[in-house]
Length: 426
Image 1: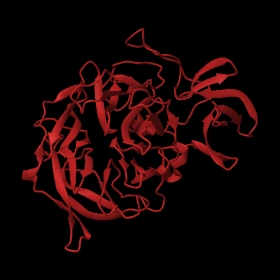
Image 2: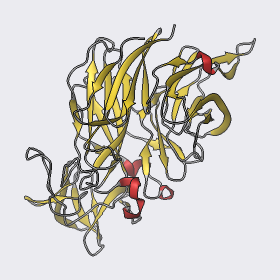
Image 3: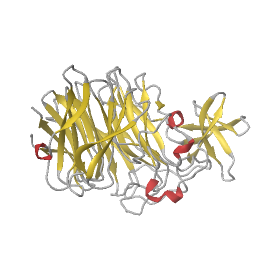
Image 4: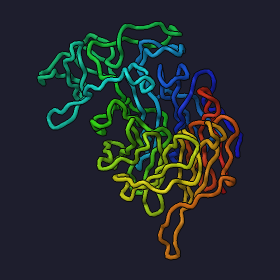
């Protein structure tokens, strides 16, 4: 195992790693935060490596949320925020990144402030976001940012970027924020204020794309309306880490709500997304990850409520429907995990203690009968796990470097430190 490198250090709070390999470049993404809560000002940032993780470039900003206040105060929540990035690489070489976005709030850390009112409405056979005035009257935001009133009449309003509201040439504030500017820790931070028309306080899913190996990223695109179902309630979120690109080229992203888990998929390199509507993945209500088996079935690994064997579901139709399966033999506590399949082997990174500690990579092998028919996964014993570290170990993400080496990006200190290592698997 190579010496671990600190990619995202202690000058800020860093959490939630995502790692992909384009074949030319390793891209590492995470949240950069102002405090150690799951709310407050959170940006998406990345680093890249063109030599297999031996050296890395400087931190680049992918996306910054609108904020009234940028503060390290743990009680500060006067900001919208991005959280929980997940990436994969499309067949055309584009890096597709999805993340959860919340308007100014504490997100699911204080659900009572999230709003159940409709976030979308139908118009001209399409679905559009809606925003509300102080009296509860709704307005429709079209694809070009122009705003219609509830009677479908034109208004002088338009929305640009991530929620910036204008009335003709007059800037009115941000639809994702609440009120006036607050006090910030630095005079050099960019803050704004709440607009008179507001988006409902609930989660949204934003997509970002890089077509140049992570050097630059597109402006965020809200794709929530394409994948949302009314039964989702106030929260629909990304399961962080890495998504799956199947042999057919389908991009499969794992998501979850407060009720269950689901998958969304794209067959056009991330231009459009659909969701599996017939059955949920499971009633696991939490983060999960997936790999493709040699027979093209998809194995999904959930998150247990305490240290125990890992919940598994399987899809035989490329993530359209899911069936509950036998639990995986390896044990993990309540924590996100990452999985990757290489040739006939499968690797899963996770904590192995009762708490988020003692990181390992469990290994399984895809089994076949004498006639060559795929049977399932045989898991190695715990004593054969690859040990990553002792002590604190939380969220992680795996990527293939080559047939003999994995890269792992993981949290090795609480809310402070994300490191990278390479691991020999042969």
